[in-house]
Image (tube, rainbow, N blue to C red):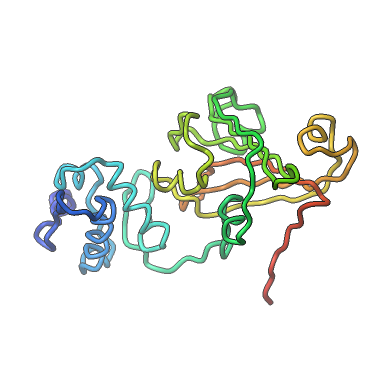
Length: 254
């Protein structure tokens, strides 16, 4: 009985979309879900319809359903539990970081135009460190992205990113776009939280060559683990910054 109620929201709302509308399908589904979760039974904890059932009913892909659902999860309106299902959130959760962006988005927000001096992507086998950070098996193939970025007068940061296979990256994406925009819009993966470690170190021969500095010059090293709303790692990022060209500011409120 509960299964039948779970797959038939049509008795509650006009559960359909307009395939001829100019409004994107995922946006239409998002509005349907916002209406659906206001129904008493869902507000009181009943599981939302399964993605596969909504996909069949609406005549669209599960990926589109997931993209809309992820948006509401990101807004803390829904809670997804593996092996259980998706329910309406009973309380509001606060992100561990108030606000953060990818490097390109942050530069854009500040009106700074940067240059990609080098951009390489492809598959590699996860090392022990990468496997531990992404919570996968050692040797599993992952997409690796290397970017050397800076201004007209030269590069000042070298990034290495490793991505969890669940995202679905092929290594052929246009990584000149905002990284997290690609994740959200193309792969329905929402970066929600960042865990970071920052320390000073000295440039070795490779980093000195990349950043146009001398071996032994100080650099700022930042390690970032980016997670989705379920706190599952999706990106392991290593950033090496020229210490004379970059500073890291943190606002702390008492």
